[in-house]
Amino acid sequence: MGADYRIPFREFGLSIGLHAAERLKALAEKDHTVAGLGNAFGPTVESLLIHEPLREAIEEFWLQPEHQKTEAWTEHRDINMVVLATSLAPEGFLRLS
Image (cartoon, rainbow, N blue to C red; front, side, top):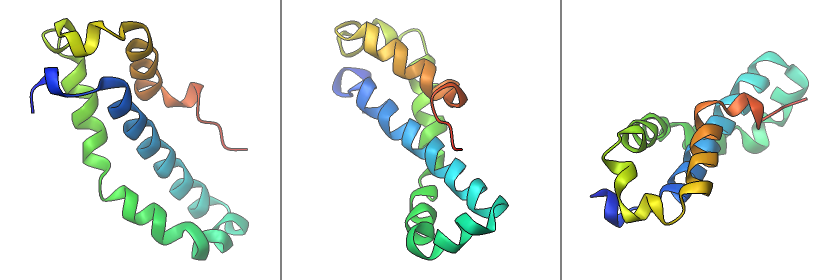
């Protein structure tokens, strides 16, 4: 689908969510007290991670300068830039204590 028919900030929401799922999985593998919760959210996280290739595809698509020249990008440029940055560097936003 072309850039004119896509909504960047919504796509980045998915991308950021996939980053979060990765972090949850890593935390559960590292911390056995969280891993005990894995029975509750483990299958959900795993089902999300099968879509992980979408994260990279979304980021690569919207990093292309020609896609950032479309109305879909320019109408909401401010929020698109913020969520793009968050997707590319999620450690500044996603913190698991």
